[in-house]
Picture (cartoon, rainbow, N blue to C red):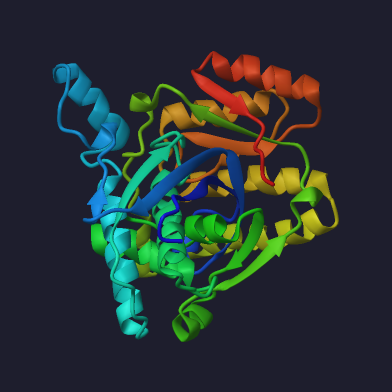
Length: 334
């Protein structure tokens, strides 16, 4: 084990139903999108070394290069994510009296997940890092607890505003139904996660904006504050969106694709009732619906997912969405 190069991956995820209720003790269904992933390479070395990738280096060709770089990957690249993950892994082992062998490593990452479009790029880096550390030190962490540790590396260490959904999907893979029931989470430290058979899913497409700097994740939403204040409209709508995931689980199991199609559209329409959606995101959803497909966000905006009936509709999607700088892919789940 000591001389081997360890290679681990974690993939992009797309919320199929129920998001954004995972941050509000709701229910969601998510799929893994293997078209895009984060890869970690880890190998023994004298010191512990986190290799900087292009987005971690503070050298720019000019001011415009810096501006583009910050818009795309934020002020920090991926190495802070790796640092936070290593810290949390170490603390988990300490708390659980797991003695780690005295050996160091060099770690490097690569990610092909489009940034800033709601496909869970940062949590994929954390998940893949955690997998590499577990392998290297031969530590088993129970699968239902792992997403919570991954989330804590981002939310508590780095102050990244995030929910459990992405991490659960990335740890369990395939297609997962998640129930974030408040009582269960408070009692057990995790929700109820159930794998659904991906072969039961209909034809799905995914589309994301390629002119990333124009995607506004920064549209102001005070939804969390309203939820915590007990705002009736927000609480009612969040409850309705969570129920769509429950209905969607049954629709998938019964292969009731017409029903699933309706639920996907309804999910987005309910979201619009309580959240501000930027024009560029609205255009994405409406362009897809005009082609005869259903459409909703995969995450917080910038990319959409839905059902298409046949290749004719898929071709239409490719052509129409290209006009608004969006790329269409068929998500590869298994």
